[in-house]
Image (cartoon, rainbow, N blue to C red; front, side, top):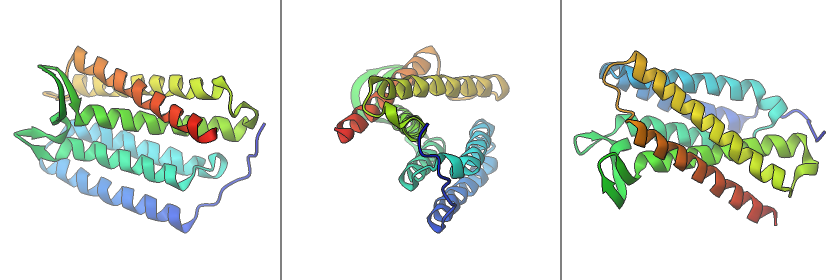
Amino acid sequence: MGDTQARRFEAGDWVVLGFTLAYGAGFTSWFLARGNLEFMVYVGTMMVFIGLLGLSLRTAAWPRPMLWALSAWGLAHMAGGAVPVNGSVLYALQLVPLVSEGEMTILKYDQLVHAYGFGVTAWLLWHLMARHFPDLRGTTTIRVYPVLGAMGLGSFNEMIEFAAVLSVPETHVGGYVNTSLDLVFNAAGAMIAMLVIAARDK
């Protein structure tokens, strides 16, 4: 087992928490004012994860850059569903016109956020493995398992979206092709993150 020395909750952590809660409260007010119940599901999920991160901070010793990266993911996600663009929302915006065939549209803001978010997730899982099992550093195991774990959590995210589809009328999460593209970009982001970490370790 690795070094499991507890990490204290420090002033810089309060800054990250305050920033996250501030934009969370702002977007929650915006979604409620517009009757966007779909994104209230995601706000609730985000609050649960913030709680889990806070409760595990001492034992997991999350690096502060990782906490900022996670907060940025939450901000990008909230903005994606709130910021109006061209009669729709930021999530639907095509950033680079690689493919433009209906739902098979690449590269969208949504896909970039998926890749970024689950890249950060892979980093988080790598951190846990490296902290508790330092002998795995530099091995194929510690580079592959975080990718697989991030892909699994990405699938769980799609289940949350499916729950939103079932519980909230007129959701805008897309159909089968959109879900499949989300999963592909989740995996791509996770793999890129692990390639960056592997290069850094070398």
